[in-house]
Amino acid sequence: MDQAGWRDSAHAPQPAEAAVLAAAPAARTAAGTQERVAGVRAAGWRGPGLAVPGWWPLLPVLAVQALLSLRLVRADTAFQDEAAYLWAGHLQWAHWLHGTPIPPFAAYFSGAPVFYPPAGALADAAGGLAGARILSLGFMLGATALLWATASRLYGRRAAFFAAALFAVLGPTLHLGAFATYDALSVLLVAAAAWCVVRAGQRQDATGWMLAAGTALALANAAAYPSALFDPIVIMLALLTAFPRPGGKPAAARCLTLLAVVAVLLTAGLLTGGSSYADGIGRTTLARAPGSDSPLTVLAHSWSWTGLVAVLAICGVIISWVTRQGPARTWLLAVLASAALLGPLEQGRLHTAASLNKHVGLGAWFAAIAAGYAADKFIASAPAGRNRTLTSAACVIALAFPLTLGASQSRAFSTDWPDAYSFISILRPLAGHGTGHLLIEDPSIAEYYLPAGSHWKRWSSTRNIVLPSGASTGGPSSTAGVTGPGNTGVFAEFITAGYFSLIALNFADTTPLDHRIADQLHQDPRYHTIAVIPYGPHGTYVIWRYEPHP
Image (tube, rainbow, N blue to C red):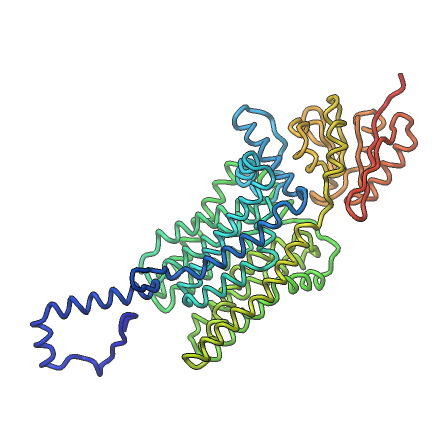
């Protein structure tokens, strides 16, 4: 059998027919032409003088996703993570081009500082923060296109449409499309790895595709260390898509090749990067400090953002099992659906909802494939003709609900931090005047926006004091990871010595330490309060200046 025409034994040519066929090469040529036309129609609709590609339904999906994310590009000033990565990228370029010393970013970034930050800095140099956020939008549009390509190869174009549409309008997806961090890049690279293993199809030798998939997966892990959580999902895809054919040893060979490529590339990267990279992976990923949020809180948030996709994905598994589609297909759908739980379960284990809205997007990418399969089977269950057309139309219209929900959630995600405009406006002349050291509770935003940010040795935070040599002291504490406050006694020493010319605290992130520092400043006549700046709905920045007596 093939897609060009359904053949069975009842249509086998009889002897007389065989003689006719043998004498009629033109008929065979016509039949071949007819099969080629059928193949063209399978790829896209062709009318008189008009050819429409089969992927045209993807275009409105990408257009809607782009428009909903673009409206968020200027929704707020830079988030702390955005500011930190873009600032680090600019310093990295200065280091490469001019040999300028840089901070030990690898020791506390949760992604390789030589990967996304320089790329984001180039986009920032070209178009500012908006340019860097639009770069992320390009990554997320690419991930949606790869989702379409992957789902269409597995389950057809109708399933691919609903899979892409459901993923494209999720709140986390739209948010990452207007968020200048490594997250969007890691989603794109993991999506590319998944597409490669599915693209290998029924080939007996898929070594080339596994090499490509392993390279993409290793780059994704380098861009964002937490993306390694989804490496087993891609490996399972490589295994299950090899059944029933080629099956057996070729399927195992695919998994081993993929795993070997990832292991070799990441090991080479660690050896090249040195011990600071290993320390950074340990601090930010493997031994991350737990938070105070309950697992139920984490799961509840995840459910509100990706619950619809997860439910539809589970329905896809049930449909495949009930209709006896075969164990390989059912297990494949189960693996895809389970990906939606990996991020929430990991953060539930760590008792933290911090950055959860970024980390659930990658799992939703896989689960959306199973959700698209469920939508396709639901439509296919309707009688062919008018009823099926109406069912399809109703499912498309029903997408208005996740679209509206995703648009609302993404707006909330993209405005969930204080607007820093007033704070930066007041701090700009203060930081630009002189060369003294600055203690800012969250310095990354000021370092990104202000010209003085390029002189990184001037800037300290309430988690870490930077010495004139560039070395660090004062924190974080050994038990609190990279988010812990600095040592109170060390900060008191430096303040008493007049090390900081400006101190700005907002009593939000390291609150107990902030209050102890503020008490010391109030008792020291050399420090004077010069500004009190509202910072968000519930916060205030207080700025002190060091003015020793003559």
